[in-house]
Amino acid sequence: MDIEISFPGGKRVDAKVGDFVVHTDQPASLGGEGSAPAPFDLFLASVATCAGIYVLGFCQARGLSTEGLVLTQRSENDPVTKLPTRMTIALTLPPGFPERYRDAIVRAAEGCKVKKTMAAQPVIEVVLTDAPALAAAG
Image (cartoon, rainbow, N blue to C red; front, side, top):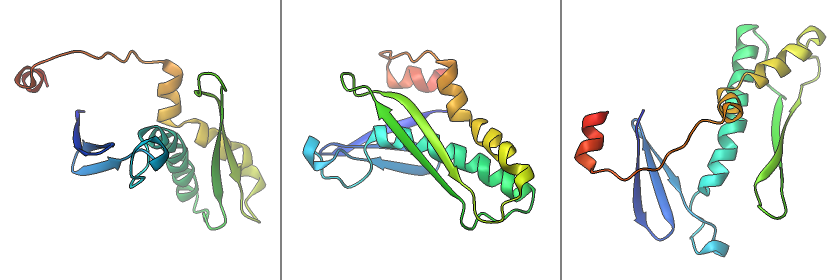
């Protein structure tokens, strides 16, 4: 999958993902307009929403309501590098959630593909290329 990046002005950076455009911006404190989430915030949100889709699928497959179900992600950052050292995903189950599914819904959230990808530490390579050569390679 190719994601095409554009630079619409200021500190905004947009990503074309299939038929969608994901907008990002920096907060005003970093010279942006704060018109959209910062790219790193989207990264963090991708972990939480990925866990969320696995939790949703778990509930839907069993006919369980998600009303009152809350998923909250918290990050702890290294004070020097400012990079996350721990990310905790907390599930608050609604009243009446079946006891027999408590451990299983945690395992469902742990199945998140974004989490697994981070754990696998894929190689991320930055290369220079001519646009036509990149298009031909895809």
